[in-house]
Amino acid sequence: MKRHMAVAILLLILAGGLTLVNACSTTSTTDSTPAPTSGGGFVPSNGGNPGTGGNTGTGGTTSRGAVSAGNNVMSNPSGGLPNQANKPPVPTNNYQGCPSTGDGGDPALNIRKDRTDSASWYPVAINSILGLPWPQGVARHARATWGAADAAAVAQYEGIPVQVEGWLAGAKQEGPESCNCHSPDDVDNHLWIVDSPSKDRSQAVVVEITPRVRAQHPGWAFERIRPLVDGQTKIRISGWLLMDQEHPEQIGKTRGTLWEIHPIIAFDVQRGNQWVSLDTGRVATTQTNPGGSGADAVPTEDPNLPPAIVETVGPGFGPTATARPAGPSSGGHTTSSGAVAISDISYHGAIKPNEPDEYVEITNNGDSPVNMDGWVLRDVYGGQEFTWQGFTLQPGQKIRIYTNETHADSGGFSFQSGQAIWNNKGDAAELLDGSGTVVSSFAYGNKR
Image 1 (cartoon, rainbow, N blue to C red):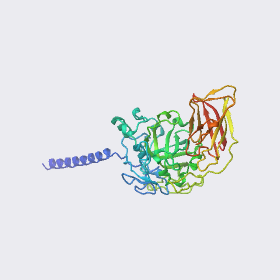
Image 2: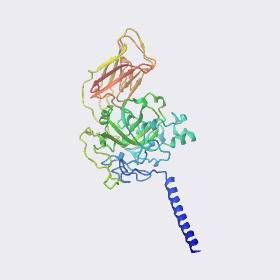
Image 3: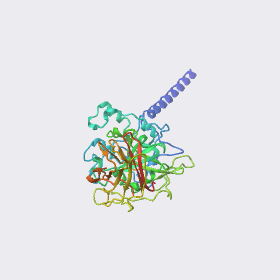
Image 4: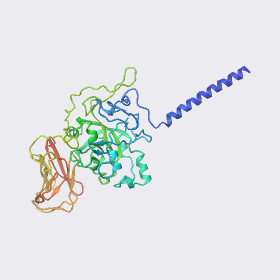
C-alpha cells in the first residue's frame, strides 16, 4: 500500500512538472517578439538607453548617441522577413513647425516617412525585401482609398524595423515634398542599396534619410554620403520598412521594388571587420565579455572615416545644404555612340545656395534630325532624371537642361530640382535613347 502511495505521489509530481514546462513553452512560443541575439557577434544594447537607440516601448527613442543605433539587433538568422515581428506603433511628431502628416499628399504615408523612433532591428537580406510582394491595387492610390485586403497585406510587413548590408548604387538629394511641408532646404536624401557592387539601381532597394532624423546626425551631410557610392565601401542601414505606393513606374528602372527602408535611423560603414558609425566615426560593433555575456559597443575613433561635414542651420525651417566649394564649369570627358552627345556640364552655378543655373548641354553633331521622344538624361551618381516628350533635335542644334531654370532660347528644358544636382568635385551624366541604351556619357572631376 505504501509503495502504491509513493508511486502515486511521484506521478503527481511528474505531472505537475510537465504542466509547468508546457506552460512556460506556451508563453515562449506565443510571444511575437523574438529573443535577442546573445553570445558572440552583435548583441542588443541596453534597452531604453538613448545613446544606443534601445527600444523603450511603444514610441521607441530618437537615435542620437555616441555609438550607432545599428548595433541593437534581434535574432533573425534566416535573413528573411519575420512573419511576427515586434512593430511599435508609429509615433507622431512636429519638426520646425511641420507636422508628421506634412502639408498635403497622403498624410498616412507621410506619418510613416516622418517617424524618428528607434528599435531593435531585424537583420534581413536585401533580396528578401526585393522579393516581398505587394498588392497591385495600392499603386498610386492614397491609403484612405485602399481596400481592406490590400491594407492588411501591406500591414503584415510594413513597420518592421529592419537592418540590411550592401553597397550604394546611387545617392541624390530630393526636392521639396509634402512630407517635409515643401521646404526648399530640408529635403530627403534618396539612396539606393544593392547586395552586390556589380548591380545597378534597377535591382536596388530605396533607402531614405529624412530631415527630422538628419537633424540628430551632423555627420550625415549629403556631401559626406555621396563619396560612398564607389562600388567598394560596404554599408549597413537600419530603419523602418515602408510601402511607398507612389512610384510603380520606376520598378525595373530606378528601383527594384516599392518597398523601401524609410526613414533610415542608423548608418554604419564597414572598416575591416568592424562597423563604424557614419555619424560619429566610432566603432559600432558590440564585443563579448570573456564570460560570454554581451556588452555594449565600445566606441573608438576611426581615422579612415571621411571627416564629418556639419550642415549649417539657417534661420528658417531647419538644416540647410552645406555650401559647396567653387570650381570650374567644364573640362570633362565625353563619349558617344552616335550623333547626339553630351557636350558639356556647367556644374558651378552662380546663384546660391541651390544653383538653379547649372545645366547640361547636348549637341546633335550629325546631319539629320533625331527624335528624342522618351530619351532620358540622368545623373549617374545622384539619380536625378529628365525625360523628353515629343521633341526632335535638329542637325547642329545645342540644347541645355537646367537644374531649375527655363530658357526658351536653349530648348526650355529643366529638371525643376530645388537642390543643386551636379557635384563640383566630380560627377557623371548619361544620355539614354528611347530603348534605354546609353548613347552618350560625360564625366568630370574625380569621376572621370
